[in-house]
Length: 250
Image 1 (cartoon, one colour):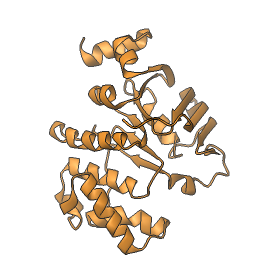
Image 2 (tube, rainbow, N blue to C red):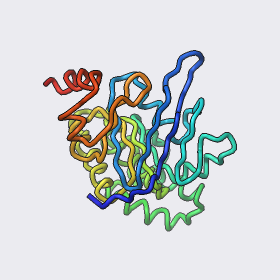
Image 3 (cartoon, rainbow, N blue to C red):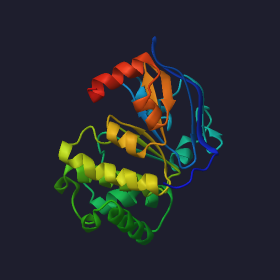
Image 4 (cartoon, rainbow, N blue to C red):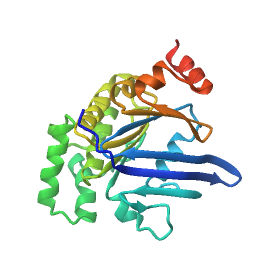
């Protein structure tokens, strides 16, 4: 894995999120270094996905700061569209445009937002499709692809904006089991290339193999974090121990 740059790419301080009277995030503090892969684990309903969605303001933070590349995106006057150009996000569901070809899906944002020429965007899209193992699918219809292929196209689409940070929100949870491996392989390659990544996942094998740091979230709080070795083999928090016993059947 590439050597980590020690500077913080993402710094979250005192992050809270309320829905009415329901406090979902209860003061999250987390720094992510440049080129670091951080995997967030925890039970369903613990706030993991809400946390990830606040990092590009798909969810509006209630309080706290989210500093990405020295810009506090939690501030009301931040131009979030400019910030989002540097933050790629891949969701559980692929959100591709069925009326466009695979290549057109990938080219859309670079042409519209970054004003790339269609020729340059197409060339880049073809390189990205080759990287995710779908070089022959540039002109294919989205509906002709399997779920795993669509998710790899979604990753290529996010990479087309040349982001500094990639966010993954349970990217394999909607896939049939035999399709999961291909998507995880693409993510592993990204990690090896030094992409800064924050990944919410239930794939513990991926967390053990790829994460520089594993963060355990429960009830809207970070209860423990550390290397995969520390978190999986020497958990300190009783709630984390219980979670791992259930999910790993040990």
